[in-house]
Length: 432
Image (cartoon, rainbow, N blue to C red; front, side, top):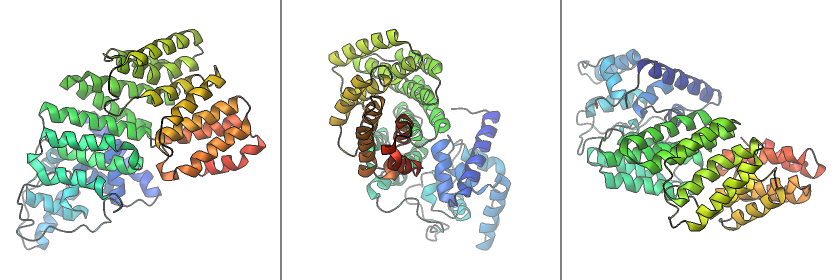
């Protein structure tokens, strides 16, 4: 995908903003790099440079100094060569790759460029060890092993292995904190970017969709829309209507979360053109139409769409599919759409949704919180507080999605300062 100079400049400015924000929280360079690659369509090789705030000229001079320090003549590296490497238009050789790793203080495998099989290292010397802290905490070895395997296979990585990596991320989506999973998906995606065959491009599109969803779950709507827009374009390019429809539908949800119901409905119409099965049609309606219509007060159209979506769900023969959409999620969206229109019915749908999910899972937390909001709307304040506190008691704060954070804050607002909600309000205020 060709990116013009103006877009590159905008991405660099956004990366600079991310760096400044992360530095205010004393984040180390590897963490800043991860945040840049999670948020922006930038290769890790470029993200490392931007995480330090260095120009390409600075990096070229630093690489030359690495050569001099080892008693070697400076190489013929130029800023133009580095630019092509960063934009995946060419690939650095192993010697340059090891030199860049030393400049950035990391392991060569973290630069997003597959190492050639049997590479001897830096002029026959062992591969430099990273000076910075490890990329990931050791408690998730099964997660980090996926991208590590892609890196080890390098240029030999085929469509099957890429598909298996994507399958792992989608099947285990709820097993890891969103920020942790996002960092690894971004790393894996960067390792596959040099592959141009349609199957791998499709996998890259779904990884972008996955990163968009994760960004939505980590308070990053700008990053979510960037990744989802990329996924929708790739879906069009490789002829995958499910990917295009899914990404457009997710864009609609992100837009609605930003309180833009009219735009959300426009995206819903685009997504509906790609919904070729009853399950996908029900998914787009539930995701993209119900809440915007409820927000706009169009109860007649809302009721008609609920009826139509129910019929689609009743006649579906599809498996839930990638990233899933099932009866539990359908019930959750019905509940949220009906919160203001019919809170008693919303409570029933939310209760059904929670009963279909594993206790402590993200879907369960979302459903229980919506159930609490429905109880608050019926002035059953103590029941609402008990449900809200059960979520905070069951799910670790670091594993709560941003969408559940928003629902909990809305619950506190719904309680309107009722005395029974004081402790809950205090606990919710401590969530990041």
